[in-house]
Amino acid sequence: MPVALLVRRPEQAAAILEARENPRLAGVRLPPYVRPTADPEAAFKDSELAVVALPSRALPDALKGLPPVPAYVSATKGLWFEGGRLRRASEVIAEATGNPRVAALSGPNHAEEVGRLLPAAAVAASPDTALAKRVQTVFSGPVFRVYTRTDLVGVELAGALKNVVALAAGMVDGLALGDNAKAALLTRGLAEIVRFGVAHGGEPATFYGLAGLGDLVATATSRHSRNRWAGERIVRGEPLLGRTVEGLPTTEAVHAWAVEKGVDLPIVRAVYRIAFEGADPASVLTELMQRAPREE
Image 1 (cartoon, rainbow, N blue to C red):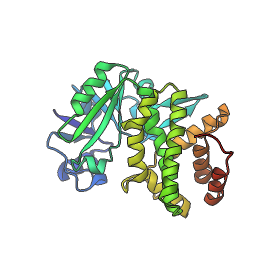
Image 2: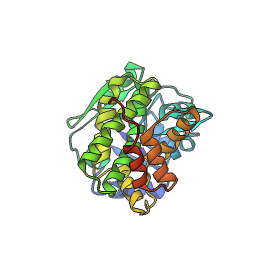
Image 3: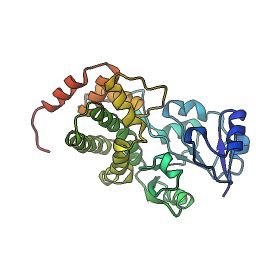
């Protein structure tokens, strides 16, 4: 099946075509059926699915004016808080394109490993079961297993919120607080994700599956994770070197929602204070540890 890779500039397409690899994923050879192009008309011509794998901050503007396709597959993991409501990537894509047929493909899928054909699994989610199954068929392969769910809301919320907890995990690493602290953080972070996600219409089981627990484990522990890396650098006072860190705008969005709605999200609040208010990490940790005792 031919695949068009839409890039921003013609010279970028030419360089990828010549090298047969994306410089951002050095050492991973592109298969011969992948054809890079900077021409949207050529990329979308006769396409069945368009995979949207853009940074969340670039998403709305990048989709405007593109040729229509029958359906979209979102690999963007982010949230937006606008007009008093949180918006998920599938909603942004549907609004920008006028096409409500959007599925999400999510899970513990670091590109560095998927590109090297190491085993991985993901979940294709859409309330349109036919669309979810089609995405499953298209993306399944010998080393990439795809499951389906109808819970698009839960899959997207899990994928976005795990980045916030991964930032916190990186902060634990940066402060050298140890494995016990990190395990406790991930456990309580998952509980916070589940409470938030279920309150917004997600199904509890989704958050214990590939899009939730699976992606959280990979993102909070892997050397490939930009969110974990960023959390570590933030508490050390080191620059992020211009790298895209999806957990940061998601933290902003969820924190703004929580403040407006009066909802207590202690880990989100802690990450926000450290990353955006310059709060002392040790002081924030002490406050978290001294919260009123309660049942698990």
